Length: 293
Image 1 (cartoon, rainbow, N blue to C red):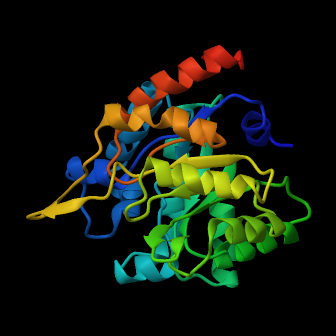
Image 2 (tube, rainbow, N blue to C red):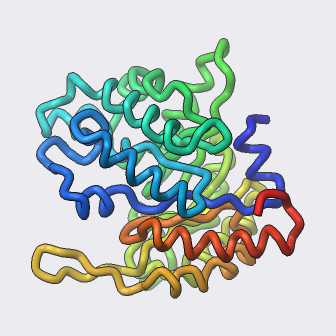
């Protein structure tokens, strides 16, 4: 069992970081080549976001590689620098969190085939795990897990899987129509190391907690949640999120009670949000007597 999996099964709730994209946009980072390209062209901004999350209490950081896929970077005109972007993303996150923390190679949604995955994974060398996030089905999980399984001479790297849901007339579903229970069964069968929920339209803290409860009916995998700061609305060229840092922190205990062994934030969250959540996580861990507080 890897160090990350041991921590996830320790009984201590881990704290992840929050949103990267909105923080980079607020810092004025260029979007010309996509936000992942900031790892190369504006690395100081990326590092400062990572550093701010660590200062807020986060011990699990995601690399700034969301949608760092060949097709996406080809549109931005820098597909030939993809491996550099990923390696730089891993290095920046690791430098910020140190060897005591954890780095997850963020693999966001997008079109990528088996050969593309095989070519990219070596660039993530040094991560403690991979996070396939904002998924609506398990296709990418199946590809990543199978490619990793072929590497018999390497140490197994856990693959965490996080799906995005929305409220429908039939209940909570992914865009592809999966229920949380169906997705939990499928992800468990495919060898996911942990199962989560992130983002999602109208997916408030209560609905995220409900997803975790549905997961737990089908799997014994460690669970995690990275909710948005509420569903945003657009004001001119900006997006506003309705849920403040204190309000989000008030929902932390609800997520823990629903089974979350790890908690972070998605769209609209910031170091302030993570700092407020850390206060709740620290209190819970102290009460539970589970180590780091």
